[in-house]
Amino acid sequence: MMELSVYLYAFLPVLALAFATWLLSVYLKDVSIVDSAWSLLFLAAAAYFAFEAENYDTRSQLILGLVMLWAMRLFIHLTIRNWGEPEDRRYVAIREKYSPNFAFKSLFIIFVFQSVLAWLIVMPLWPAITQHVPFGIWDILAVGLFVIGFIFEAVGDWQLSRFKANPDHQGKVMDQGLWRYTRHPNYFGECLIWWGFYLFAVSSGGYFTIVGPLLLTWLLLKFSGVVMLEENIVQRRPAYQDYIENTNAFIPGLPKNGSGKGE
Image 1 (cartoon, rainbow, N blue to C red):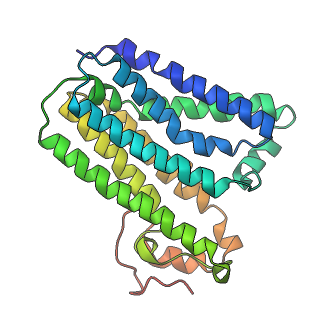
Image 2 (cartoon, helix red, strand yellow; image 1 turned 45 degrees about the vertical axis):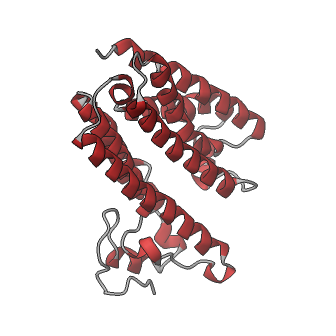
Image 3 (spheres, rainbow, N blue to C red; image 1 turned 90 degrees about the horizontal axis):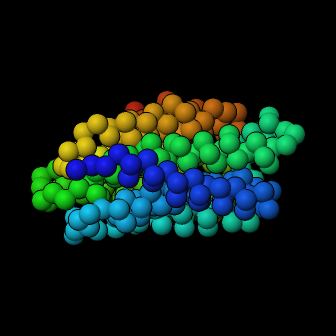
């Protein structure tokens, strides 16, 4: 039986981690570290579900292991990417908008806000980890979605990192590898991963937790993902307009110009 209190109390470790990250951001004067902490918020909730599970079986261990794999890879990737860099321009704009006293305001508009989002998105892991059910077809499909999503996200991030590391690519558009078929393979992979976790929840009777992957999909497509990143990118990189016209924004597909190469 799913105890609602388990899900509700899972917000506490998520909020505690967000608060600790906020304190560090005040000390560093850089709220960009919230990006690195993002995946750890989910891991904190998942660990709490595992701790509260009455029957922490092999299936639950598998799901928690997949969450840990996703969370730690993303945490390490973003931490390495942002190490030694100035505060991200997105947060610089927010800092300017909400000054003065941004340090205090950021606790709510960034850290508490993201902890609430993470707590809602992580909902499928509540029944998936805490319920004792036999490993079935939904779980097989869930693992399959997770693997495909993880490949898209991890390989996409790796390919983009290599591209940016080459001085010859300064100011150019990344349209190679997985980026030839979708402008955001990492976001597409992230979406698949969390729909995979939802299938684990379906296997556990948690159909209603669909709010989690739906919210994540909306965020990636309409709020903080594709829309935010591409809001003014053409002004900074004019060649990106050709990339937009010829490459799918999210779901992979063949380039419309047949090559996928930005001009």
